[in-house]
Image (cartoon, rainbow, N blue to C red; front, top):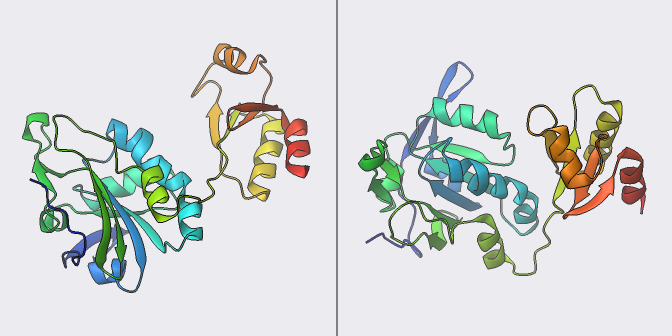
Length: 243
């Protein structure tokens, strides 16, 4: 039976992390003391659900969390610091702090260390999320204890609804682009100047012209969509942003 730690302090431990060519020791006091923090834990870096959904959505909603009183968002996994550092680069998750619980010390103290030897993982963290206020667990969302890797309640949207059911979420913006496209560069600059996050799908790497035609009804780039609605190219985007 997994342990719900609501109302209790997080376990005290130290995480060795690698920053550049140097080792650094980060304590739980450094992470939690005097702060309101979200921590979500998952089975492993580079694994499918963790990389495609769990981590990216927390990164996408970070601004909404910060606007609603959260000071920091951390992702924890029972992986070493080198793996976590590479995963952070791969994910481009600039809003998230990565915690390498390599020995499983924190996960065990939370009552969340589980055996995934059947997958060749060894000991890993169960998937959960929690809101921690000055080192005390205020709320936990623990995935149900069923076979496999359930992902039903520890997601970013559930956590944001708990913090503020009326919180404003950022628009979901997707841009199809291709290398060397000047209009694509102009559109990206316009989105960045408007402080808007966006997903970029690069033709030749992430999709084909046929895919773009099927989705947008066009083969020219860029093609921008906001919340599923087609905006169009760079000119149409600038008009949209000006309105």
